[in-house]
Image 1: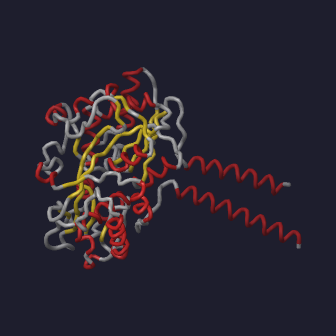
Image 2 (image 1 turned 180 degrees about the vertical axis):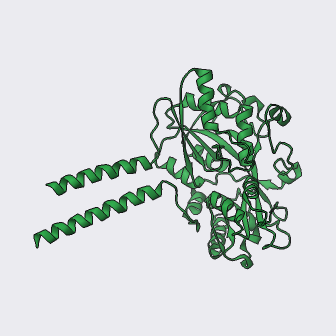
Image 3 (image 1 turned 135 degrees about the vertical axis):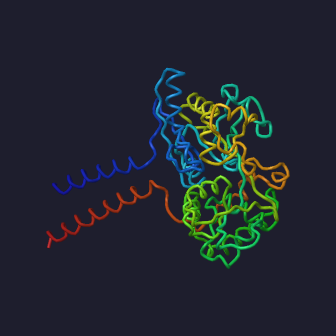
Length: 399
């Protein structure tokens, strides 16, 4: 009987640990935000411009208390990749706001996982540049930042021109090539490496891209965004497919002994993206979530995020946006590239369920696990060990 009680108590404790390790459920005046680590300024000073340390979630809570007279807690969940964020939503986890790239937003919309957002309720929507503001009224995604992919490289390890995707398959850099862990981004790179159209409906082209990614596995070093930044900044990687904003963060973190440069893809078609604010269909606090989106469009919040990510703010008047705040990258021609450079880039639309199956079947050689996995795995191991010990003791007593 005592052993049964011990087991019950231990199971209760470990269950508590498991629940603490998982994302919290939404509560009244609590806003649950899902984002990939590094895409919102959390005040840690580890972004592209380290001097901007405004924690936008804490700033929203203060802003909402002042403007609405109510207290609110923002509960962010940081994911290692967009694929993991999508998987959480597909598994039924609840969030009030998600920040994702346009490809993921389009997939969520196609699967009816997003709620409509009334742009009239988002102060600042009128400041969005017409190039991004596709409609007024009800939309399922609000453009917030923009950027493009290219090739970060260590100039001591990579010589010559770096302006084509196929350099990522060069065996001279075996073990030092860094690719994105998100399947959609990896497939976009592989498709463009083969000069395929990203809107292609030819499954054979997507399968060819999958074969190229599989053949590349032996060259890979690491994949997840934070790993891309950390390993390139430490001088461990030779070259990486990454966003220009990630490159700026690498350069900010790197020691002077690590010579980094960025190659814009000009020898082949480039890849650009827009980062979107979305409200999941199962959002528990739609009105509060809309207010959060409105706050992120305020000049100080937008500048804080742009400084942190190194991505372009999608507003019309950059000079006006920077007048009352310190926007470090406002005049950077690489953050805001020329029209001719952008004309060479394509976005990656959601390819549809059939082709998405080819993409989802690919398993990248990513290292690391989501941060919540370790306490969950540890608790499971401890529980299993205790149950085994108790079973052995019981068996010994019977003898």
